[in-house]
Image (tube, rainbow, N blue to C red; front, side):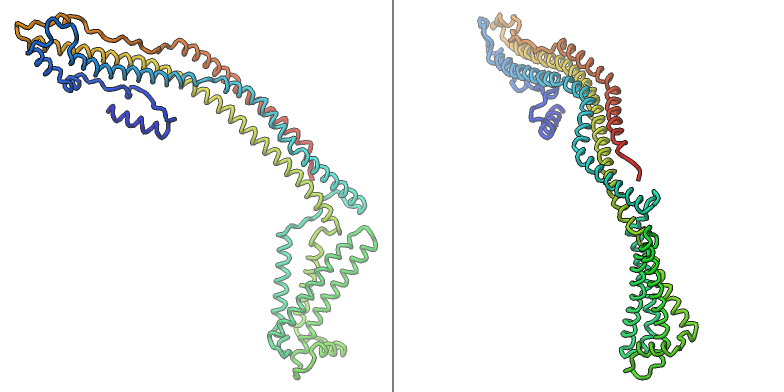
Length: 479
């Protein structure tokens, strides 16, 4: 199991660690007295030596086997000591790395730092914002003068959007197609080209019936102008538009009336219709002719109405008011972006404050954990060193005992067998916690102070945010 632990620690440190080997209890060398005894053949050698009377009773030096025991276990003892030193060094390094001073100072500064960053955000956009305010006020002045000069009330202009214009255009296209389809068959009967010529003729008349009234309707808005001549122009255009669509309707009725009467394909259909009109013939011989004329006039009047309502009914008002709205919307967009930037910076600052406190709490907890590990490390190092010492003593005593038991009666044991086994003294590393306990007290005090200023600092940031936010309110005004 110890081998597997060492393998796992090695793999983990290779992929996640800093490259430094992480020491722990699993890193201590294994000291197995029975295995060492078997590997060195302590019992067999002791009996063989004893039977030969080795060592001599006058010898005072250790035998080779005793030296092997001390050397083999001594290496493990030294490795244990080194492992303990490295373990202590790593623990102490982690303890020394915990210092809340930077996080504490940063947390204290974040309250004022947000105010500086907020001022920087507002200052960076001040030029663009002031320019947008100047432009919006300029357009507002132009709008007020336009209203005053044209005696208009303080009401918004009609500003149809692309969707509304698209609906009107689609409706006119449908009217044009319907009118062309209705008349194509009638015109085809009197034209050399047949259905194609009839369709082209019907389409041409439909376009003329819709296009001119539409553009006349655009000029018809002058009827609402404060200037008398402009009003007269508007009504004149209205009369032209109505007369035009009525003439197109009557013309279609005459063309439909004369087409069935044409026998010679070389006959000019339009001239024939004009002659019929000059002779005073009525084209409204049936309900279909009346309906065709009425539909044509209706379509033309709808086109005129669409032209009239294409923009605001007062000429020029939509353009002036549209520029005013666009200028104010640009200003509002800049203000909205500033508020979003302030909101983002506020959330970032509050998150940093919370993160600092959380990191400090985790650091203190980690500090306590490392102190506990330091106490455990001292205990484990002591245990493994004692095990090494006891192993040396036990194996040498086993050697001497078996050697003595195998000796002939005339070969007494040497006197040094009675001497205690001398071990090389080694001072334990300093696993004391006094300095760490003092540092822990300091870190806990700073953590307590951080927890104490957490809510006041958050409140300070929020208050600064509201103050900067309110600075933008006077810059807004309703359209």
